[in-house]
Length: 443
Ligand code: GDP
Image (cartoon, rainbow, N blue to C red; front, side):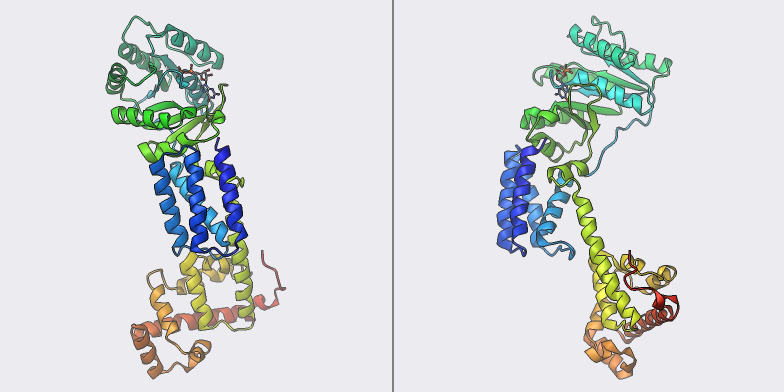
């Protein structure tokens, strides 16, 4: 799945990487290609439009991570938005509440519903549940027989459905029987038709009303692309689906259904079928899929690595300064800026050996998120000489700084006190074992 999309995006990003610095034009051009790539992957056009708009807003806007090259930043943004498009996070089945739990599988004929019922039973069995399969497609005795055979193969009991009786009665009886036999999860394989029709929907609504299932899962064939999305929309409008299971994704090179269903219908994909065999059902993990689409195995690792390298560099610089007892108000301000950008001061500090025990104390001296703006303004209002040596800041200078930064003298006092305490703490550490640490002893 997603092979073509993956190739296309990879070539877009390769080009972007070639630019080093990215102008707004480069980004626009890249986004035009991302848009084409998504449309070619058969993603719903409205979904594509929103997607590109969101990426543009973030990429052209101020969201920057210093550690990443501009092209990597775009990759990261596209990655994040893909994850969101695919539903954000893995959604588990809800089997809580009344037992036995009831799962209703619905969908058109040929979508893979019966096979999926058996796959799901097998998966639940492996998770320690005790499933019970219920063939409720009474119009197709072949479908009932098919499920019986599959159930036997995986060792899951199958309800002996009498095709001459109404499906709702059969299903209710099956739930009661499961309860008596200590089976905790009833999977109902409902009737399929070639098209969505009123008779089918009526029957499914009836089943929903009488069984009150925890899950109503639509089984849809990924190969049918936007048709699957439309079908999901119709079933959802009538039944309020709780999830979708997309089948045959291994044969779908484009991936349009997977990328559109959640955005169009608001229904998450919970599983995907990746082959005809009964163990070929996988929980759907948006992050992993996004990683795979972007063709880098693990984009996040890449990003985390970049981040760690940068933090390490800062830690080294900071350590050097502490070594020389040269932690000025300017450094303090820079740390605050970094902190505001990515909340990494704690990380940076934690990389400096010998600082562990002091870390909590240092953190206590740091202003909180809301105070940061004020603290920055105060330090910005100082002269360079004042920033290098806070001791020269007397009463009249304090008043001037307060005026210049739109704060009060008390604010200035508090900041200087915190800074002085932190500088003292660093100094003490320097006098202790810290000074003797060998160079470069950073993780
Ligand atoms: P139903 O009519 O919806 O109950 O569909 P079936 O369960 O009978 O499946 C129709 C066909 O799709 C069968 O040949 C299945 O083996 C096949 N099938 C189901 N799921 C998958 C899948 O994830 N991948 C592939 N390749 N085939 C599947």
